[in-house]
Length: 485
Image (cartoon, rainbow, N blue to C red; front, top):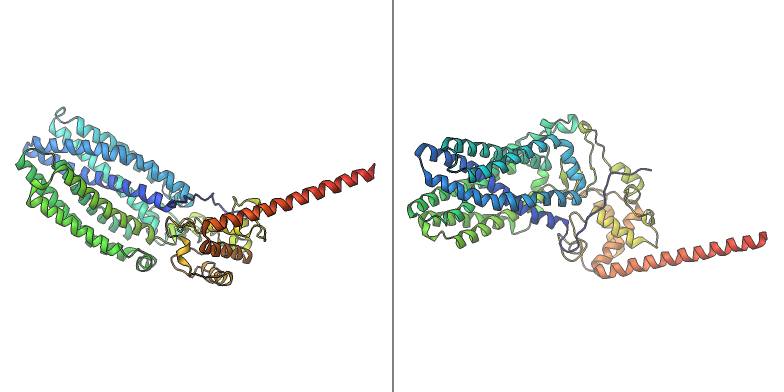
């Protein structure tokens, strides 16, 4: 039997799997990026403290480090496994492709992360217990380890958009997958925004400084760092757009929400204004105000960025060969990977999927809606919610009054051919097209309530037919036994 390597579909009906991942990822990126920027800042400040014999700088490092321990290395570390779990169940083929290509690189990243965790504890608790030169070396090692984790992860994230070199598809190879123009530009861009985050979060620590002169000094240092890094990051983002596939630019133009551009500009203006105010009047930097601004700037800034990064990859989820719906959409000879589309085109997704219920492997009048729902979950639910809520609800994409014939024409002419550039190619047999279309029409007209009733009716009809068949078989057997006697 021809089966493809697909897994059961995880569908969260209220918000959808995509939003679950996005919520966890936004907080994790906030924590991880802040820690890397702060680690590099610590390396600079500790060197300055050693050269100038500045106890106040070491005390600032200690307080900021203590904040990182709680914010990044406790709360942030919890969301790390959260991302692994949510992405693994939502996109097992995508995560599998990354592990397939980068398992040893990821192992190296975990080694550097262990150094980070140990390092931040040493920075905080060894102030005054070791000489300044030793403490400086610890902060430098901490900064290098933090930067190394970021470099590794950015390379993997870049691969999710596009492999480093086109030749990877033919030859494979870790270096071909990892290193590319996109990787380097994205690295510089993220470093810039990391310093912005570090400056914003650092304002919370500055707010607790009692010495007015030192508070003014640190407010100006962080404010200057924040302004320069924000403007640099915005410029690098424009450069970054020149290194992404044309497909990503097409998605940006057509599928990103309307608020994306204005929100990014708004956040940049608010951020720079905040830094100017803190540099001009450090007395305004109190803990409640600094904490509020950190939430406003970082969350509102990160959310559209994470939405854009996830959307721009469509229709792929990793390496430009795994579709968003987990189907392998192209051959990768260098990795020994074969496209799954020919098998699906030959026998249909219901027979090719290993977890299709036996009652749905062949479409008939008694299971049409249920089969359509299964196809929707497999092909569509990673990007579109079948319910009224969640990410990109399906019912919004079809006009009122659409009927079965029009829906079948759309599904056959657009979805099965891959004619929508930012959606995966979704091969189907004619019977599967009919089933999916029936489900989508019902989803548009009656919603989940109507679908549930239709499926219940189909199940009852199948059970009734099965019962009649069982009774008929029993009677036939009994009659045969009676005649034999």
